[in-house]
Image 1 (tube, rainbow, N blue to C red):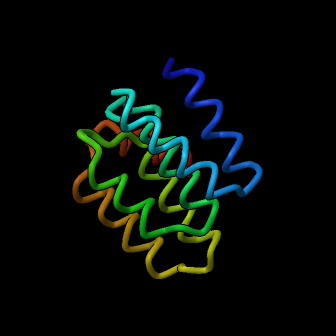
Image 2 (cartoon, rainbow, N blue to C red):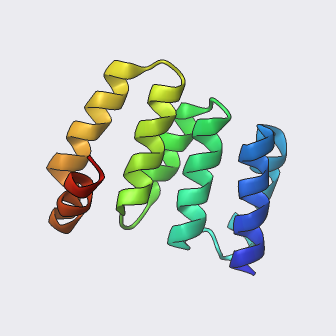
Length: 110
């Protein structure tokens, strides 16, 4: 189920195992769980932590809705890889396109 897939994707990002993560992503697409928001966020996290920012952005752009975790994941992925300017640009995109209620959460986090 989607919880098992989430755990497996999370294990791949902690082990920095992009190959296995991509295999799980393929299974997700075949299983019909690929549109699950927490799973999509986990995929963004896995790709960004494994250094595959292009695929992280692709998954992010394919999401039907973005939550604060999704935005933070890709912004953090950019900054962890040294792409500070891109991280800041993603942050600006979040402020421009994101849910206005998320701004309250963001202010509280700062």
